[in-house]
Amino acid sequence: MDLQLRRTNIEEAGVLLNIQKEAFRDDLLRYGNFSSSPATETWRMLAHRIRFSNHYTIFADGWIAGGVDIMKITEHHYRLFRIFLGTAFQNKGLGEKVMMLAEGKFPDAVMWSLNTPQDNFRNRYFYEKLGYRVVGASKINDSLSLLEYEKIL
Image (tube, rainbow, N blue to C red; front, side, top):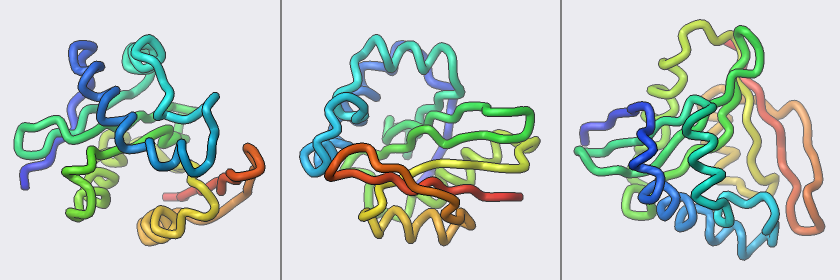
């Protein structure tokens, strides 16, 4: 499968928003974090991130498969704010390839950070396999605690 990351065009926002809502819907129902869930994000909020962050569209064989949002924290520290794939593209081994492509876009990076739900063992295994290590935790609500991860290059 041909996989590419390209800077997101604002015209892709509607498609990406639908994929994002689909990808995070189960988490929203599980954790009830209605104020901060990607599943409740508006088009306007996504458009703002597309304009002011490093937002990439994931293309798989020419189809929009998902998105990656990366924020520059300091000169050599980047944060994976969000990564998502549509359900049709999940469980196909694309995540690791997308992460390598995303990290490769920023050769000046010395540190990467991200967070993921504490009880999402699949995500945790995935990030730890890629070299990320737990450095902290925070409680969002009674149902959701996030683990903070870092990867030092």
